[in-house]
Image 1 (cartoon, helix red, strand yellow):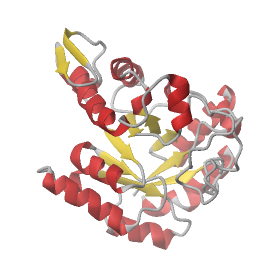
Image 2 (cartoon, rainbow, N blue to C red):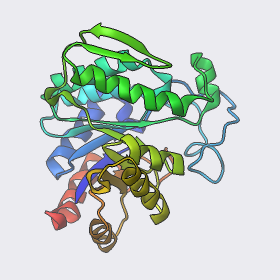
Image 3 (tube, rainbow, N blue to C red):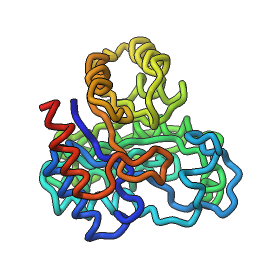
Length: 289
């Protein structure tokens, strides 16, 4: 079982020195990865319903709190670590230009030494944020599918071409290419649509909350229908607090559990400080070595 540290760019870790201290502690403790969240803006008094809270509000209900850009934050901590994988959970992909995003993600992976970036993506839920960015909300699922295909073309092709409904380019060089000419794309979300998307095109699936069996089954059915082996899609789920529950997840084919370091996104923090992270490594991660 692998362990990730999630919600890492929130709270006190929005500041540079604290972010580095956290990332270095995670690497020393045996975490394989560290994961960020994203909102470009949070509109005051938003009416869209946050899907991961019974109140319909994010975390504690606050709207005014720092969320550093995930790719910038990961770039900052990448230079202070060596092996820690750099994950987004998630990047709201339909809000971004896919060509610019492909370039930024490949640059991060290249500068970090290669094979470190895990690109978690989602469709987003905050309609008012899309409006503030001047981006359509209703077709965001279709655009995510196409954006992933376009980014993979830019990462893998020597001279890349792609022609779709939302993005089109012909014979372009996008350098640097990521080492291996691929970036793992992990689909996030707790809906059947997200599970099916993970099955169709994801290298991994990362539900935001403890995943019910029916969602994982939906992902596996979609993978099989697409001619893919469901076992090739890496599963990351929310970390239980008890070792026995983690062992049970391992038997069910889960590859990674994600441990919250902040409660701002709605899940209780299991660790809060770098000292907690190191202690978790000794008391929990060491059991699974």
